[in-house]
Length: 439
Image (cartoon, rainbow, N blue to C red; front, side, top):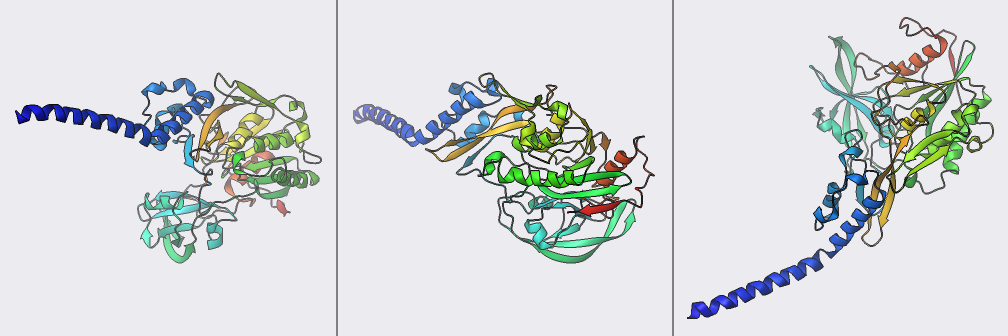
């Protein structure tokens, strides 16, 4: 009898507990569900690929926002093997970097890093690293594919000891290296830089050839000042110097250009495009069906006095690191002028992102909202292929000249094409009269 009386009581208790758990779950997960609902609405209204969104009722509304966003991102937005959209907490994070670009080589006798570029305001520059350096150890450990990656963008504030080497011979095309010294690489940090890292003018025969090393095409949202202010004036001042020296040919070095600004390529194109291009489309920014498309016309007034170069063609040095705004500049100028690309195929990052903030919960969302097309309504999602393929990280290059040096491999090849219009002649040397003028 006691067992029969106990059973209804247990059932009633279980029902009360289930009801209580349901109420607690609603309260406990309210922040998540409200945040995730905001994410879904923002994607639905603004996401370029919103037609691929799942029904909201089929999403995991109780997931953490970091996991929830994964159910909304379309594979169509992947560029360079990575998703473009991302969720962050607080202010949009600037990546921490040591400020160097390099290639890793796994050889039979030794593995090494070859330094290709060093940001002049970076921990790498402060440590004394230079373009062309050979690194064979990190913190005393021989290099592998995995430990070399710790020198890329990171969230860890770590310093490292790097062991440098020099080539003493070659074996079947592979350099034999002798360790020579060590240096201390300081902790990574966020870097901000002007778009122009270096500008030079070469006088070669009867031609004046300008050289611009552009690295920072950073997202506009990362800069607090008005773009058409200090930042743009730095670029205008550089172009005025070139115009004052009657530069008739220009080489843009975009091998290490990062960032996805729309404004910087738009402004620079206004200085480089021929006069007949003004008033015509520079780019179309296509959004989803609700947002439609935006059109930006080339505008001579943006350039400012004394900045425009009278160019009929443009030479661009590119690499597999060239991305975003730099690609946009090249791609959107092509309908209006002869653009010759020397180097490697570029990344293919043709998407524009906007930043949305949820003030209640402190999250920010960087969202792919548009795709860039040029005046011929062509995009560059598969990258820009070089007209003259050339890889500077070839291990046969035992010495690398500084960027902007007339004997540097890619620059020399571009100048050769400027001087000689009858194709690729590897045996041709630049005239001994070639000299460089730096400002």
